[in-house]
Image (cartoon, rainbow, N blue to C red; front, side, top):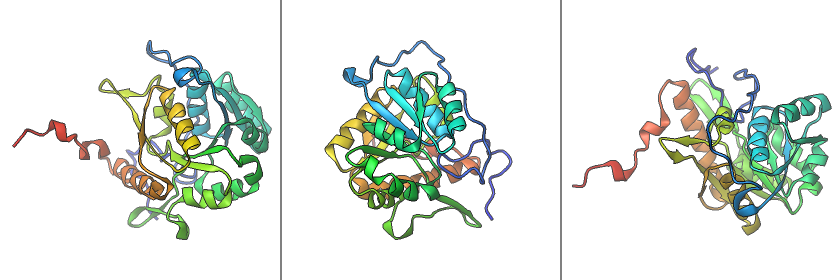
Length: 259
């Protein structure tokens, strides 16, 4: 069984809690930046969040701060209420309530449970942008590996489970704590958020979700390329656990001297 070394303080976004135990972050508002009121370019979205873990709290808080209408949905009402209190401004309801509330719906549950949940709510998710932030990772003796079945990615499994939804892969590469920053900016550069999507409506909605919290949308192609985002998460998280910095492996070509 692969285990994170003692110095690995952060779990992988979307990895089940059996791998690493974390407490929910308190959404913080440090800095003088104020996200654009009512979202990017004045767009105020209705967002449903399926799940009551750290990603639900962190991204939910970021979207509430950006002026969006957020509803947290969970199987346990008390847990959903706790997350709503952390987010300060979000409503609560059942999973189906949250799915019906959102023009966009964040699926923030363990990857292993996501396809079944998408199938259960397929009717409620029809015609909506469904954002998959999960990472289907399993620990092995060789490190973190993907567990995606024959579809090539968990995102494609979700699309098969809810065929009338517009599935997007996004928000899976950063640790949950990054989404509590207002805004996520590093070395004076806004965080780029890669995403994969097929439908024009989903692409536009995802760009608003990303841009309204002060980040830069980074389109990476259609959903067929979601497997690359999931594989990147496996590589990057494995490097973090090994005590190295993935960003150090990807310098900009502009920083190299001209020949």
